[in-house]
Image 1 (cartoon, rainbow, N blue to C red):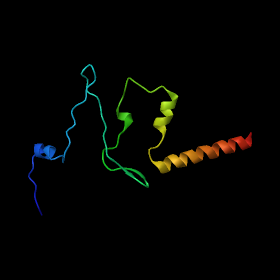
Image 2 (image 1 turned 180 degrees about the horizontal axis):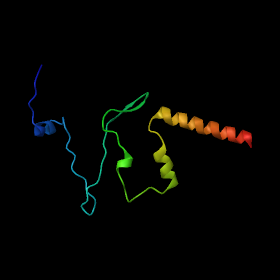
Image 3 (image 1 turned 30 degrees about the horizontal axis):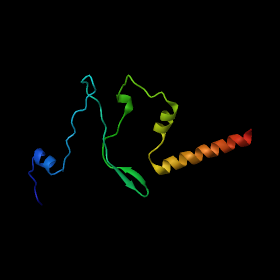
Image 4 (image 1 turned 90 degrees about the horizontal axis):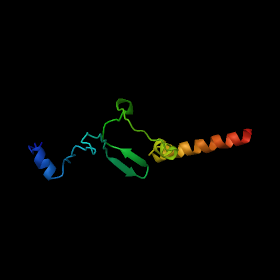
Length: 100
């Protein structure tokens, strides 16, 4: 087995690691950022790294109020899930139309 003894600086130089600077808003307060890698494959998108984001652990003084944007954010990025939800919504609408 080959043992590597590269320093963090060498890894950044050879693009094995990527440094992420601390993000700040206009007042100098740190800003949270969540990054992950997604594979875009024919069967759908696959998130291959990054921790699980738990929004209940973060409190914000801001919120999204536009209904269109809220609906967009609620949609799944997974094509299969999005298709199932779309079909279910259409089926529910059709059943509702038949009962009226």
